[in-house]
Image 1: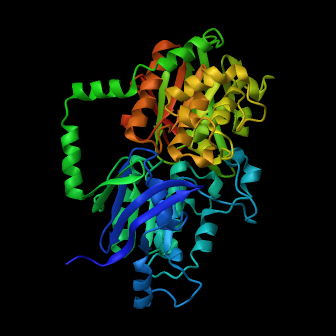
Image 2: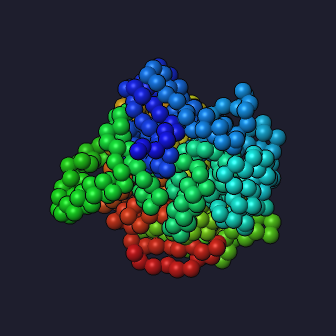
Length: 518
């Protein structure tokens, strides 16, 4: 006997701005099922989540949110004509939508590093208590959320000051406080450290046990509580499998010989002829300078009584390739902000960049022109109305968005970089019109486009599928092979770090705990 249907789409169509994303879509969620959506980036996973959340219209065919009627019959939700099924869905997207205390504007990129501006942001406690006004139909109270999402130590912290991983934990907590019948998660473990990912799997089991049904987009781990997997391709659900069937298929793929996998990777990614073109175009334009790229002596960052970094001593020589690791909130992004100059406290520290002491008369633009940079924070705040080509070209001028007419002389270089990352077809599309993965690849291209002496890639593969991740690793390794570039690479996944990285810095609670060769 089949379980009760909670949400059903039959022969449905999903479209956005006159573009059909799905046609003839059949998808059913039954009671007791927990779903993962998998597939290559751009296959339609996020669009399906948006449709389930009511953010994209489902037209044609037939669809019904049966769970809503069941909840009304059970007495768990009110008999209110203004209360729709959308009130019973929580959707955690790739970007947060935090606003200031007066709810009049969103935050901007550098706000988290400016203590005065950060005071305009609500604290974690304020946001939780504001969202905690919902009835706790499934038992998720403010106290319950604080404990289960490990938010105790963050309560007095402004949300703009949270690390990428800490923000993710807060977003999960805020979603749970709505006590939704259906929880939709877009790559929920993105930005989480290894321990927190393990804890998330345990939390997910508790969420499901409380009666909430879950549909999650996944590129990496498949939590034990997932029962069904839908594999998407080109706007269609290609296969639907139970967990056991899916694991058997994946195990067969993993038994392929390393030689076969290497051959597949080589054929799939190619030799990057476009990258050779970038090298040729930029050859002679980039000066790598002397052997000293970065030197920090007794680095320290403090906000009020909270010490973020303390006694950091670190040198990067020309051609060295470093990884930075550490738990969420360890200080990784803050350390990078001292190098890029985005943190005002950089000028109160003893820092040398490219052989020159910071604060000795150089402009911020003189430093930035030698650095290529991408991070989750840049992704969060980059203007969405910018086209892909304009966003990449802005990297040549170190602006967040292009504030001048596109230069004809840059067209060949831009096209080569886009083709190297597989996004050449999207050049004239605005960021808000393309898949999240294309947006992320665009910002990686922005970091690479000027062929910088120092390349800083802070979680560059976040939200990318395995093929795109391999492409990035392969491209970075090729860049390191052909040039004297210095590299800082941040990732919570060891298998995402390129082979060319051979030195490691580990942070713990704002302190440097180890240097080592990888």
